[in-house]
Amino acid sequence: MMNSKKIIDIYVCSSCKRFHAEKKQNCYYCNSLLVLKETAKFGTLYSFTMVPEKMDAISEDKMLVLVDMDEGIKILGELENNFSDQVLIGMKMEIVSIHEKKIIFALVNRE
Amino acid sequence: MYYIRTSHPKENSLRGVSVIGIGMTSFGSSSESIISLASNACKLSLQDARIDQRKIDAFYLGNFAGESFSGQNHLAPLISNILGLNLVPCTRVEGACASGGLALRQGIMAIKSGEADIVMVCGVEKMTNVNNHRVNSILSSAGDTFQENSMGISFASLFAFITQRYLYENNITREELSLIPVKNHSHGILNEKAHIRKKITKDDVLKSRRISGPIGLLDCSPVSDGSASVILCGSEIAHDIHSKPISILASTQSSDLVSLIEKNSITSFEATRKAADSAFNISGLERSDIDLVELHDCFTVAEPIALEDMGFFKKGKGWRGALEGMTLLGGSMPVNTSGGLKSKGHPVGATGLAQIYELILQLRNSAGERQVPDARYALSQNMGGLGATCSIHILGKME
Image 1 (spheres, rainbow over the protein chains, first blue to last red):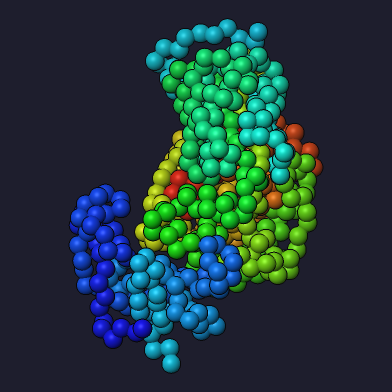
Image 2 (cartoon, chains in turn orange, cyan):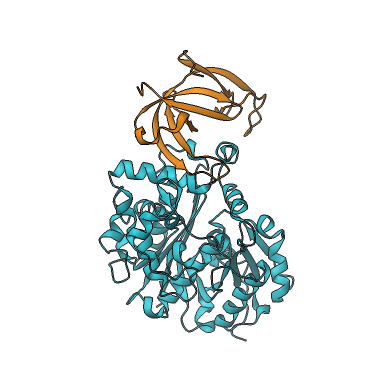
């Protein structure tokens, strides 16, 4: 479901500053405390790949995206609905959902 | 008996190191165990050096994932037991796909330090006895498992991100890149030890089964079994042992961020740049002095990026090497005359040593149909993960 807010909550390590998509107490890398951070959910498509069904550990065609977030970090995620023909590097993207460790992006103003 | 062992005082700690023996199994799908593959390559290198195994002072083994592929850890002393290298220090070195190159560097440093006079280095991987899904899972552990593999992303997909970005930044298409695997297969046909000795065309590459767009099957190095080994010694005794010793002019290593998402750029690898700059500084050679290169073409795009990072081509122009013929046999600087990882095969831990095997053949003028005429200086680049580890060696004929 599309989130109308322009920010999204993510977890950032208080020490090494690494981003964590899932809610946890401590950083995977350095075990420091994670802090909740409101972050702009927009970014620019940096690269992408279309993974066919049954390749990797997935069961259907998926477009994986690497997005350069406006906050200055890159995030790996999946593209909502796989608009493969319309996708070009440099397009504006937004995070529409985070569930466990899976981050779903959509094209901004794709209409 | 070929030499009398002497102690080396500290002032000799920067002694030169030479290669006096090489051995390699055929690469491909083998029924042999990982231990058998490694010991066979080592025996071939001992035969080539014409020395008794009891002369070996230390043994270094490059291996990425013996425990995952074959259920066997503690491989270095086990292989040493088979070879009869009794009681010498045996060390396994792991650096993902650069494990072989790193093991070689450890062997070189053991001799430079004076700790050893003659060292055996081996690289091995046995990969074909597990299914493709398991292979992908094991290879993915060379990346950042927390940030990248949790989504089920394979190494091919990570290199697909790199390929897509490389095409975008340089305003080219897959067609321009497709001549790289075509070139490497044209070389591999001439290598009797290569895994896939088959001519391929640009169309074959472009139409090959999509693995992770834009990467197709023929952009990927194969899953292989195999082993390669070299024997090293202090240069001051090299001519006493072998008639054509080859000198190690530089052995460098660098590391960078492991995770794709943490890199500022994914179309250039800092570790390769730094290791190459150091290697040229140490050797005193210029890029133009290098007669041939063996580099880490695990996926097609890795070749032009390595050529650019090492300073042989300007940024964004490495793909022109195959297109314009410079990197072909007969070109000004042939690249991957062995067939590269793409055609020769890529048994991960063995790759760094197999690159050295090819360069030694070339520098001995023993490479047969794929011989580069008058080769004097050669370079190898062995990369681990997404460029997180890189070792570079420059070799030269001894005067």
